[in-house]
Length: 392
Image (cartoon, rainbow, N blue to C red; front, side, top):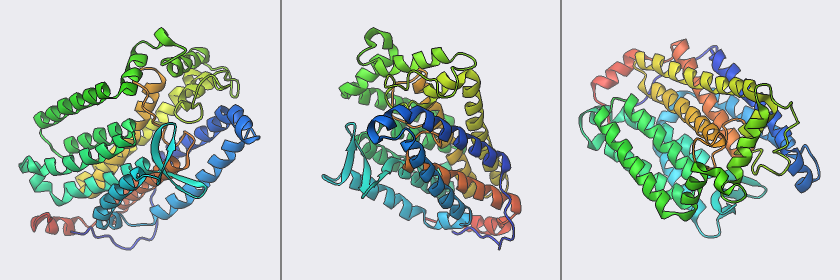
């Protein structure tokens, strides 16, 4: 089955989504510059080293995102199978001996000369596109039989297994959370959702018990001050940053925790440095930005669903949920509400792979919103195809 679209003459971008994204990007670039000055001076000899690199990543991301807004959503529907195959190949390749690049004990990157690509970021994007297409192509089977949702669940679990071998526990949690959320929105019965959640939580508990470092992280998360100079060091330093920030913050550039006290200050724990410098009000502004992006994703998805453009709807739902879930998990880790998972703050933390992929996600959301608002989706054609069946 293919989605049909008419020729376009103008673009109708979702302005709240666009403005919210620009706000997050601007604050993120500012905070990367502030949080990385000390480590950049020590390792690269220039306090603005990571700022300039992040600016280059942002320029590249903007160019790629602009190109994606020009690609019809039908293209992604047609390529969904190849994208799923590509995600498995990338995950297998990064685990191949001598191929994957190891950083801090995790093999999550493929290196191409001076460029490193984080495979899990690309995998999250590919999987949401594939799941959205699957839920359209097998809509009847999904609603009527258990096999309809067991098949994609098996693929997601297989993907999660490959990610855990890297290991990348955080990406696995985000992917499975997004998968179950999409299943629920697609009409999976509540008893199946609760059953799957129970099994998932049991599996996560088993994984934590099987890996000593995960158990140590859980213990540190529950009692960080019991070993504040050992396993609880990173979390206690993060909590100190929040305490120093207060309501108004210590002022931009005045963080003490970024001065080699808080590890990964410009990546995983950027939110803590921002809380120290910009205070509670800065945190509320950033959380509002992410809330706006997630809301617009759900809004676009709902509107597409009402037009019976289900692939558009599931794409918007999936990307909105994925962005919101990862942002929520990162903030919760920084606040000590969840164990450390190694998840970046989308569109804000330093890193090229994450920034490019998340900008592509936003661009595709804008494209979906454009096609919905401009009426480029042929609803009558969709209904005729639906009447003939959903295909294989």
